[in-house]
Image (cartoon, rainbow, N blue to C red):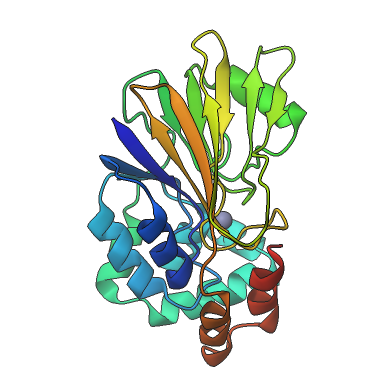
Length: 253
Ligand code: ZN
């Protein structure tokens, strides 16, 4: 079984369309959350995400944009996140807002105990799995062979040994064309894997990120694909969203 792994689309329709066009054949989709927020096409992206089916873990922006985030958490969002969430709330259709509000909280176990899907950390959807310390903590909290996570917008992962997790990153040759990077998964190790962000990468590479997990071959492949960044930026500006949301797409930050 082959699974398309997507995360942090953030209402970027152009990036999602490029990912779907570039993805190899797959049997199902695991979406790790933050379907909306920041980008200018929340309804079109939610429509597509709904059509894709599979499982969807809720992200913090999905909660903020559908009005289901607790007030104290909403107040703690950055001005950029809350501005974009207010705008998204205004433009979402009732039906899409309802779909977002009903997304399930992680962890979800699509294949039973060996695979876990979360947005942030296995024990807390709002926390970031972003360094060795948090990787150690995540490996303790998750008993799964592979934990798929998002939230950091960084395409990377960790391989462990609980005492000493090692950082895994794709080694790409360029920053403009489509590329892929394969990781053969070993059943004696455990993994924490982030497919990267479809719609707002923050690892200095503007290309849309995703991954494919091949269950039968025990193989993970990280992908990067270029997309129409200029169109996504134009839509953000036309929507009246803050300029920084457009410029960061150019820089991948
Ligand atoms: Zn996000």
